[in-house]
Structure formats: structure tokens, C-alpha cells
Length: 419
Image 1: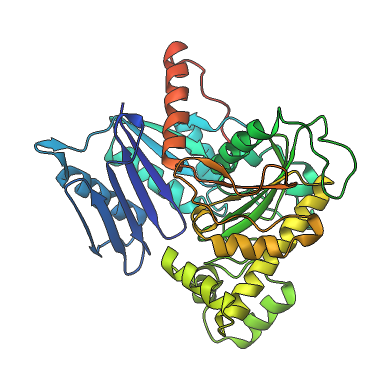
Image 2 (image 1 turned 60 degrees about the vertical axis):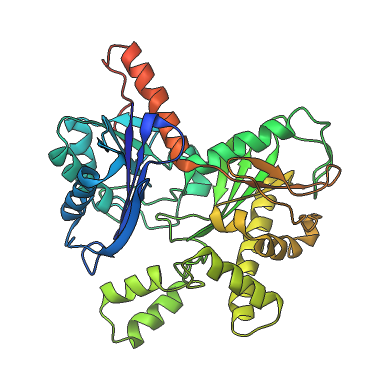
């Protein structure tokens, strides 16, 4: 079984072809700025490329993806083939079940809530893929299913009840599969040891399990508090760019600052939103740029020091808030490509958490696809980095679901459609 994994944001579409549903992807590609001057980057065993592509909408982006898949050769005379398309929805999950089979009822349900943040591009791509690949099996992976059972006080906003919206406006979380996998692997390492005393609290681990804070950093940044294996608080908002400032996006803006921007800028609203979403934060694209800015900050170079220090302080404050919500802290886990790849970033964050007795982590390599402890065995709280292949996670979840679906005869095996 081979899977084509498709994932969308508001203006981008990325895809991965997973041969035999495991290992590294055989074909990868991304179309950026769909609807504008679209850029298409792709790679496969026999080559790679990038350049401009005509993609005024997501249907055109799907057609460009399909054309490439028809043209590439994995091995001589072997074209890219797949029998299942996985639509990776960043938001939309309403149950802990992460995988759903696509049927007309589900599509209709999603279409009624098509204005929900983070779903517009994914829904348009789903409809285009079903039309372009009618013989393929289509399933949805809900990446925020991990967060669906957060307590009401953690997922709700203090909004007037008179607002009339076709969807629930609440904190959705982000990269749920990644956070769930990192949590389970670290918790399994913590459970079974001698229960240490928690920083800021007396006694050992609670009956519910270890208190874990996950610090995510890649294009976006966020902090999540987990008790045992259940998330109970997160800084991520209704879409990936909401919450903390990151490489892209300025983070949560106060109403006063937003009002000032709207009153004094001459930019149209769409352009202002695009700038805040895509050109704020640290404004870096590649790992080397992120590490360069971190190095300059440690050397005291302006303006890198001010920008990086502000970024790190926001994250350290959120980690402290998460530990307070948990009532203590047993482990701090770094996840996301930038967090895992930058020792300077991890050092800067931990240096701002002395009140929680978090030691500066060791500069040790983090092997791919592994969970690595960065602190001494006797230190508490412990510090970890989790390097996890999300494509492989998705492939395994879908393979497990399809095996169960086949065993039940395919009848009634899909969970109810999302809210």
C-alpha cells in the first residue's frame, strides 16, 4: 500500500508520496503562495527542481501536483503510483479518533463550516483531489484530535455569546500527532523510574502521570502542558499562527495594537493580514538562518539580540505558565525542527527557567527519529528533545485504520463527522 499525503495551509499545498506506507517519502513537493506568484519545489530519487507554477487556486495546484507525479520516475520505468490519498487537516477534529474515511456526508458537513480558520485550503484541495483521483481511497487525518478533550477553561475564549458563527471558535492546538508521539515516548521513559520530586511542588508524580511541558518551534512556536498523556493547556490558538510569536507570525496581538494598525496603515486588510501572518516573527526561512540569528544574539549583535531575546522570553514565560497550570514540572520536551536542531535556542529557553530548577541542557546530538535526554540522569526536571518523522506517523495511523476498516468489512467503521 502506498500513500499520497496532502497537507494545506491558507496559501500553500505540500505533498509526500510514501511508498509501502513507511520509511522516507519517495516524492516530496510544496506549492507556496497558491493564488499568487506560486513557487513549486519538489524532489524525488532521480532529481529535484523548483520554479514558478500556474496555480491561481487549489484546484490548479492539485493539477500541477498530479502532473508531476505522472512525470517522475522512482526507478527506471516505474512511475509514482498510490491507492490512498491522505488529507492532513490541521484543524477540525472533534473526537480523539485521528482518522476518518471521506464520504459525501462528511464532505457536506465540512462544507457547511468551510469558513473555519485553517480549513479553507484543505477543503478546496479535498474536493479537487476527489475529482482528479476518483478511483483512489480518500481519508482525513485530523491533526488536532490530540487536543479535542482539553478542559473547557483551556480551550474556550471569553467571547460574547451573541456571536453567530457556523463553527466553534476555540483553541485547536497544532501538530497534534507530533505532540502525542513525543509525549508518549517521553512519558514511557519517565514512568517506571523512581518517582522524583516535582519542582515547585512537594511529593512525587501524581496518580495521573508525569507533568510534561512540550516546547514546539519551527515556522510557528507554542507551548503545551500535558498531564500523563492528556493535554490540558496550550498557547496555540484557532490557527497555527495564533499564540506565541514564531519564525512566521507575530503571535497574539492585543486589541489596542491591532486597532492602532488598522487606524494608521494604508494597506488593505488582506495585505495587512498576509504581512502579520507571513512576514512577522523572526522572519527566517531556513535552519541556517535561525541558527545564525541565535548565534548573533549570544554574541550581542543588534538587532538580532533584541528580536531573539524577545522571542525566547515569550516562550520561557509560556513554559512557566504551563508548569503553573500543571502544579509542577517533571520534564521539558523540545519538539519541532528548529527546537530540535538548535542547541542555542534550547540553552536560551532553559536559561530563563532557573526558577523551575531547569538546568542548561547538554550540547549532544539528537539522532533522527529518537527521543534524547539532554539533562543528567539525576537532574529534575529532566530535559528532552524528540526528533520524530511526522510523515511516518501519519502513514502508520492510516495503515492501522485501514487494517481495522478492512477487518470490519468497511461498514460503519468511520467515526462521526467533525463538528
